Image 1 (cartoon, rainbow, N blue to C red):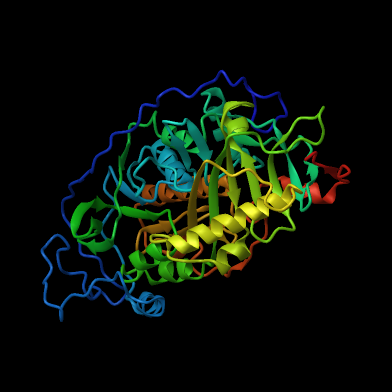
Image 2: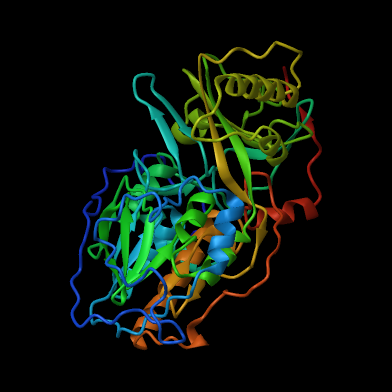
Length: 494
C-alpha cells in the first residue's frame, strides 16, 4: 500500500475515478417518544422555544420578521443577547445528527460518526455536487476542466494520513508530481523540492468529495438545501428551509461559516456558539478560470518541463496559477485550462456581493488579473494570448485570517458543535481533522448519555489569534521550504 506520508512514485493515472455509489439523497425524519422541553439554567423554557416550529407562522408584520436582510450589527446583537437552550431529554438509543454543510469537515464528520455507529443527515447547498470549496468545474462540450477552489493538499497528521491512504487505494487521489514552486514577477521561477508530497483528486477535487460517502450506510445527503432555521423543541433540534421542515435531530453540527452561518445562529438559542462563529474573520478571493488555445510560456528553457502550479510573488492581483489540463489530464496539446487566484488584498479591495457581481466589476477584475498573469510570466505588455473561455467567481468567505487553534467547538447544553478548517488553520487537512475530532467528541458525549456538564464543553471561550499562510490557504509541510536553501531562480523562456 502506498502511504500518504511516503515519497513513493506517483500512482498511475490509469486509476480513473469510477462513478461512485452515492448515499441516498433524502430527508430523514426520526421519531422520538417521551419528549421533554428544552430548559435553561433557571428551569424556564427559553423565549420562543415553546411553540411547535412546524406550525404555520403568523404573517402579521408585527409578529414575525425574517432574519434574512438584517444588518451585521443587528445580527451580532441578537446573537449575543439570546438565551441559552439547555436540553435535558435523555439521548435515545439510536441518535441522529444533523450536519449543515457538505464540505470536507462536514463529510468527514458524517463518515466518522458512522464508524461509531451513529446516523446523520448532511445538508448541502451544492447544486452540482458536494464538497464546498473542493470545487471542480467541467465544461462538457469543450471539454474543459478546472479545479476552481482547493488546488492540492499535503499530509502531516497521522489520522489524515490514514484517510488519504484509503483514498490512494481506491484510486481517488494521486501524488502531483508536476513542477510546483514560486513565480516571482518577471518570470523568475523557483521550484519546490519534491518533499513533502502534494496530492490532488484524480479527476479533480469535487469527484473526491462526492466519493467520500459512497460506501456509507448510515448517512443521508440532502441537496441542494439551504437550512434557514434552527429551532429547539421538545428535546430535539428542528431544522427547516424557508419554513419547510427538514427533520428532527438529537444534535447538530455547523460545518460552514460566514454570514449565512451567522444568520442561522442569530436566534438559535446558542449564544456561545454564535459568539465564537462571529469572531471569525474571513478574506475574499477572486478565482479566474481561463482556457487558452495554445500553451502559456511556462518552460524554463527548450529542454525543461513547464511548471504546472506556482505561488505568484510581487503581483498585486494574482497569488496562484495552475495548469489544470496538465495537472488533471496530463495533456500537452489542445485547450489549456488555467486557474488563477487573486491575492487576499485584491479580493478585499474589489469585494462585491458574490451572489450578484456587477458586470462592469467582473470585466475589470478579469482584465486586471490577466495583466497580472502577464507580469508574472515576464511577458511584454498586451502580449498574453486572449483566452477563448473565461469564468470569474468570487469566494466571499474563502480565507480565514484568524483561528482559535482548536480542533472543534461543542456546546453540551445545546448539543451543537462546529467543525471547519478555520478552527485549526486553512487547509484540507485541517478541515478533515476538525470533522473527525467533532465526530469522536459527539460519539463520546452520546455514550455518556448527553450530560450538560462542562466536562464536554470545548472551545466556547478560546481566544483567536492571527493565521498565516499563503493567500490561498495553508499547506502543512511546505512552510519549511522558506527555511531551506532555495535553488537559483530560473527565468522563463518567452
